[in-house]
Length: 487
Image 1 (cartoon, rainbow, N blue to C red):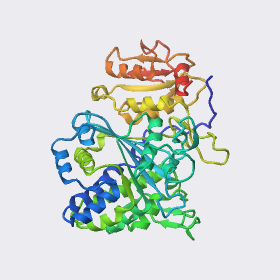
Image 2 (image 1 turned 60 degrees about the horizontal axis):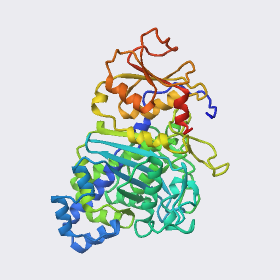
Image 3 (image 1 turned 180 degrees about the vertical axis):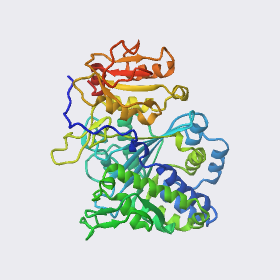
Image 4 (image 1 turned 30 degrees about the vertical axis):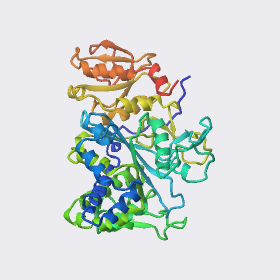
């Protein structure tokens, strides 16, 4: 049965969707900083460099093995997969660390997929408040319902008993997080990188600070201190460009309760994080940054955890170092909020009880989420048709479905126009007003949405108010609304 939750009508959707840009270049920034330490570290004493590699990856250096990997990578390695056109998936995690009251909660979660055949990358942000049903215990039928940001901490604490044996050892937290985010997205992760607040702060200090520009003032009176309270008087940063040390950069990146609306949203926070990570990357890859490699080794050694090898890091860095911004798909799994349409999530009680901030998937089977991740890398020839596409909502029991679908697919490169409502339709239809001018786009849309393709004219079928009568129009029917909800 189709169910929905009524929401107040939102303002007209902006064609500029900030979710495209969430945490832009974070993987590149982290890898750039790691590579600075790696590349310059070889000039240090062998033991010092080996200590760093062992602390961050759990493995000691094997010089012969590393050389062999560069010459001919072994099957299954990241270098091999990138060389042979196989998709690579990496999970990026940001956590509080030992200076936080919840050190292993991963408040930043990003699934990064690399498609070497099309030379594209998708960076997908997963919200920390998403509620999932974890099966990380030795009895796989036992389920623990909690937010997805708790997956990393399960093997590292006594929060639940009887954790399965595969989630043991130095990479236990990363493997557990990979399992749960993998269930959600349908991705199989090759590697993970986890970084804590201290590494972030010390990294900025090791580089001598970074320059960051704010679009507005940032005044936050609820910024947490390191004693389960708040900083007296709050934190305050003026609009404009300023030089930040490590603690200041962390404050600007973490602030959630700014008085300014533009800074208080998750999107505002993501923009600031993006700017800071870009500043770190820029500083780390300068001559001065390379000169600070010993300090970077000290800053990162105890506070970055990964199962990536040196060969893995170098393979990804070499593959993506010249990748243009146009080749990066930036996407976020979101719920409707204010004027933002959201996509595959909603905010209500998902099983954590009232008063808890929580997000739930519209489709509890994750089928629609999996479908998106499988379909996100649309063939370049299809995108090259530049077909004008519009989604119209014929599912009268699901208001806003057209806006959600538009928000979902905007970052993929399809040429999408603003959505509108439509008279009720039980089935989904693809209305082709082009006379077959866009066959690849039509085929992709039919594969994603189902339904039949109808040769349309400006008068037949009768268009809805505001509907375009050119290009391709997808009438979202009741049948698609049911699939969206997993029914």
